[in-house]
Amino acid sequence: MSNEKLTFVINKYIRSIDPQGVTNITKSLVRLVVRNFDAQTADKLLKIIAESINTRNLYITVGNKVPRSRSQEGYYRKWSRGFAEFCGMTPDEMHNEMLLKSFGTIEVETKFGWRKRPNKRSANTTKQEFSSLIETLIRTAAEMGFDIPPAHREDDDEEN
Image (cartoon, rainbow, N blue to C red; front, side, top):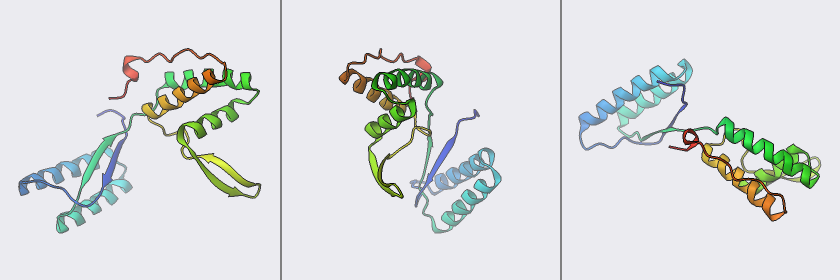
């Protein structure tokens, strides 16, 4: 198995027409957890699975989050720096503005008064979310008379 991060969302139940199917799914899940998670996380997940088997109510979704690519990051940083200079801003100020436009805002009271902050930071974005950030940068720059060429999408950068 590759180094891809696995995310478990564990809710209330496993559904299967065949009771043996639930047993097989549970055994496979236990093997997956033991092989792919650190001991502390595996212990927590195994405890949840064991409790759920007794009550027969466990719903599991296994997903694979694809992080943004290095080429996306490089493209965004290059052009947001250029656009920031065009606008008389620092690269960090421009990045924050793009986050606010892309992901929305939340107002937080600080000792300096009320401040707007983005609902989401870019650190843990998926390729698709980061593409949205890039599109916001391109669109905003165009509206202000700064031309940014369209991003080149590589085949291996496309989300599965």
